[in-house]
Image 1: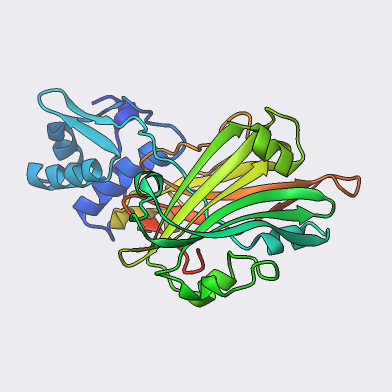
Image 2: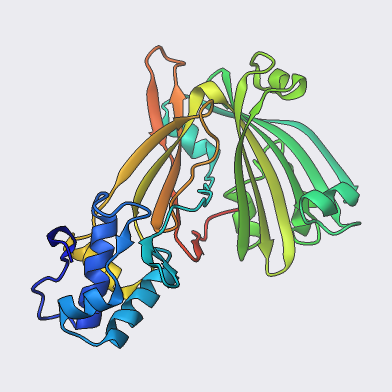
Length: 322
C-alpha cells in the first residue's frame, strides 16, 4: 500500500475496531484528505496494516457504510461516499423577539380572520382531514414602518378549540400563544424562494416579482394536525446562514470530535436569490438560522435567530416549535 494511504496510528487506549473507525472517519472529515470517490484501502491491506483479523476490518467498514461515509462495492472495494441531498430545515421563533433584537419597534396587524371547514385542497396539500373546523388568519408583522413578514395560518379547532374565541387582533396566533394552548409531537418544515405575486407584493409593500423567502411549517399533536403556517419574507432583508460540522452517528466519531481529530466546519451565507434550500452532505450535522437585516435606521444590522439542528437519521427539534 502506498505510504500516503497508511492510516494506522499509535492509540493503544482504543480497540483495533475503534482505531480503524476513527482513522478512516478522520481522513474523510478532516478537510478533504479523502474526497468523495476515493478508494479506501482493501480489507486485506487494512488487515495487514493493523495486524488484525479480516472480521474486525469488515465490522468497521460495515459501520462506516451504514453511517453514509463510505460505499461498498462488490469486487471493486470501498469508496468515500458522494454527498446526497438533505434539505436543511429551519425552526421559526417568535417574530416579536426577532424584531426587538433589531432595535426597532414591533407591530402586529390582523388582516383577515374567518372560520370554515377544511376542503379537498386542505386534505391534499397540508394533511388536514376534510370537514375539520378551522380558523384561517392572515397577519402582517412590522419592523418599524416596514413589513417584516406576512403570516398566513390555519388552526384546527379540533386541536385548539380556544382559537374560536381568541381575539387575534390583540394576540399573535403563533408562539408563545399557540405553544401555551397545545403541545406538539412532530413538525414538518419547508423552505423555498418565490417571486412576489400581485397579492403578497401588495401585502409586503414590495414590487411585483421581487424575490421572497417562504417558510412553511405544519405541526401535529400525536396524529392530530394542529396548525399550518406560511411566512413570506421580503428577500432583500433576509438570508439563510448555515454552519456545518461532522456527524455520522458512530460512537467513535463522537469521541474523535471531542478530541478534535475530526473537526471540519463550514459557514455559508446564502441570499434568497441564490437559494432557498441548503443542501448538506449525509455525514454532516447542519445548523441553520435566519438572518434579518434592518436598514430602517440608516445602518445595516443583522440579527440571527436561535437555530435548529438536523442530523441523520433523526431530526432533533426544540419543544418550542409551533
